[in-house]
Image (cartoon, rainbow, N blue to C red; front, side, top):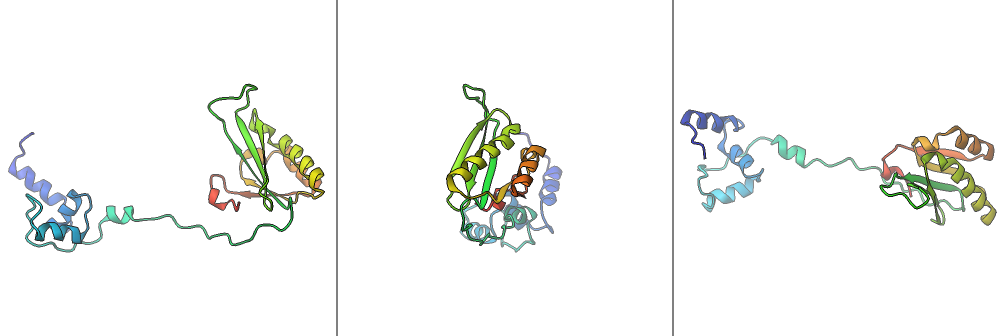
Length: 189
């Protein structure tokens, strides 16, 4: 240990105090302990070397205030599931994966029907294949169910903004709905 000169110790002692209170300094030193906890230590004489005769209330501690903050909650989406098959298809792309498949595919795309929650997954070599896979999925799903896709719900990723996909959706009357990227709570699924 390095010895500290008395004048340095006094400077350090007073610099950490808010409004000059020793209570606040010990609040900081003891990991932002609460007023009641610090009072318990002082009244039961548990703390060795804590030179506080009485614990005084301190103003708001900035560190404690920041630590107690929470995220603003998203409004819960109370809308029910759609009532018809293929009315809304949710889609997302995942990747690149650290390991490729034997055929060199490192991404996958999911298409999930909102009503039935039926999920179809396609493996992709690149994100640019999303448009072709959606066309394949739409043809397969519409043939099997006799229904038509009305909405494609996805994040705002570039793979869903391609001209090829936009043209396909426009020709088929499919509306694209986008949520902000990386905002999973906004995805209603």
